[in-house]
Each structure stands twice: as C-alpha cells, then as structure tokens.
Image 1 (spheres, rainbow, N blue to C red):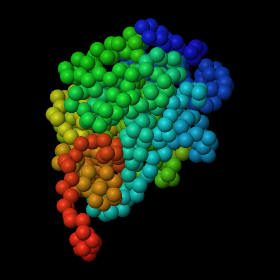
Image 2: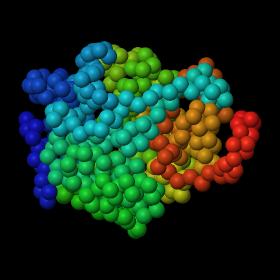
Image 3: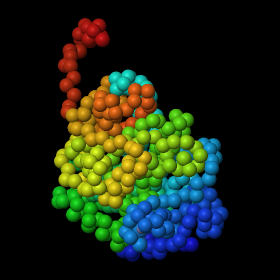
Image 4: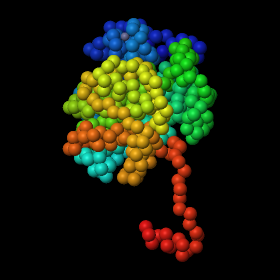
Length: 438
Ligand SMILES: [Zn+2]
C-alpha cells in the first residue's frame, strides 16, 4: 500500500480506487510498522455506499461522491494504554488521530483545556450539575485550533505545498497560524465584514490574505474547484475527514476528566464538525470498552441559521436554508454541505435534541456566564449555553441530570459595545470613598 501520496501544487491528487477493505483485514493491510503503532488509523469508509479505501488524502467517495470518514483499528483498552503523556494537549490521544509519523505533527499546545464546574449557573438553570469545556484558552482563542492542528499536520503528512480555507473569522486566523507554524504556505479568504481583530490576526499569519465581497457560495465553489485540482490542501470544514478529527479529542478529554459521560452534551453546529467529531469520540470509546453509554447529544444553532434544527423538529429530510444575520457569525451557515444530513442522521439514530436560540438569548448567555462563573466568551462561543438555558426554562431536561456545554471561543476577539466606566477624581479622599461602598 502506498502511504506516501505525493501532493504537489498544480498536480491533481491521485486518488486510490475503492477496495474491499474490512476491519478484519487490518492486520494484512497494515504491517506492524512503528508509524502504525503511533496511530491506529486504518483507512476511509463512505457513509453512503460503504466503500472502503486505503489510508490516503481523499475528499469524497470515488464510487458515489459520498462523505468519507476515517476508520481505526480499536482494541479493548483503558486510559493508561490509550494516552501518551510524552505528548502535550490533544496529542496525548495520538493513537486515535490520523497522523502516522510524529514528525508531521504541527502543534502549539492545543487541547487539554479546562473543564470548569459551573454550580451557580446549574442552580439558576435548575439542573444538578453543569460543566463548561472552555476552549478559549487554545493558542488562538478558539476550538478551531484542534482542527487546524490535525489539518496542517495532515497537509504535512501528505506533502501538500499549500493549504486554504474560506472563513468568517476564527477558522481563518487559526488555520493561518498553524500553517505558519508548520511552514506551509496558506491562502486564507475572509468575508469583508469579519471581526477586525480576527482579520488583523489572519493578515499577519497568512501567506496570502484575501478579503471577498461577492457571494459566499460562489467563492466556496471556486475554492473547492481549486482544491480538487490539487492547488492546495483543503482546510475547510465540509469535506476533509482528517481535519475534524482534532475536535474528537474534546469527547476524550471530558470523559477522562469526569470518569464518565455527562447526561447531556451541548454542541454548537454550523457545518457540524464538533458535533460529528465528538459523536465519533464517544462512539470509539464505547467500542474500546471505556464507556457504556452515549450522552444525549444536543445540536445547538442560531434561529437565523437553523437548517438542521428545522429538519429535525419537523421530521423532514435535510434542506439548506437561507440565513439571516446573527451575532454568532461562527454558526451562520445555511448550507453545511454533506455533514448537515450526517448530523441529522446521528440525532435521529441516537434520540438527540436540536434547539435554536435567538441573538437575545445568546447575549443573555454571555452575560450570565460572565456574572455567574467569571468567564468571558464570544457570541458563537455561548450558543450551546444559550440552548441549555432555553432547555432548562422549557423543562426539556430532567432536574437531576448533568450537562456539558462546549464554550468554543474567548470573548476577547469579538466586538462588543464599549464599557461605560465610572469617571472618578484622583484625590486620595475621592478614591477612598469609592472603596467604602464595595
Ligand atoms: Zn460511496
């Protein structure tokens, strides 16, 4: 089997053909090399037709065009055997990540983020316990760093000469940063109304920073075409199965820290990367005998962009929708591509929940999070918490249950109305008086 797929600029990617690969054949297909031991990844499988493919960079099924995902040879194991403390952050879980040679890892220490108990918020929502997985401490302040690390590491693994993404902010800044770290040229596109701090960050890190003013869908089509021509590695969220694996480690970290899975797991959904990836993490842990159940997965969207929530609640097939502006720009997606139906399928198969929240509910969640627990997150970052607050209000979750919300970004890179501080005089007497009323 050819493990060294060559990926050159202006050279179309050479995809392997569909095979008849099965889990049981793994030992024959993959000899016990050192790189194999580093990762348990085996190959790719198509969700739609079941075709199996050798391990390679492949964006869609060559038989039916369907969405692909990675398959691992998962033994019965435990935390001590699964984790490797010679590595930092999410790379402690390298056995369930798709990089076969540690020399290809591009990292800035992403992962191992804090799991923060939120007892005051839990009380006000009316549930037994709440934990927040706070992703704002990742190197660029967002959960995207996990997927940027696996995307850029994969680009190195397959010898890519460049990497690209179309972004509304966080994804572009994060991917450009990791590409810079990994010395891979990046071409980063950002909507001209992106957040200024994020755009400055992108322009500093990207090899080519491009601001677009036209139709988003037109640009995506053009960039996807260039990616398929092999001009750059796909750093986008809609098709690249290597990229989303980084977010899978959230499920592992949460379960390792809690010693079990929470009853409800709230994830924001735009394209569906976090939702699908964490589902995969819980599913893998079940296969390895590390947990005996799956949490109730909750898909959280903005009311202005809720194609999955609308389909789930109406019982209809998935359909892309037209979106309206929302302050949660990171979830402003009306057409998530092939991952949209996949999220819907997981929700239906596993009796999940799907909730949409308004901008007012998002702002309320931002304020409550800051006031109750001392955490400042951006609007996109609190979509999951806003959905939990709504579910609590509507009595959709039992009061004796535990919940986890992924807080996906810091609030420090998002715009917010300027603070109105108290104007004070500087004399000792005036300053002393201020302390007397604290
Ligand atoms: Zn297929």
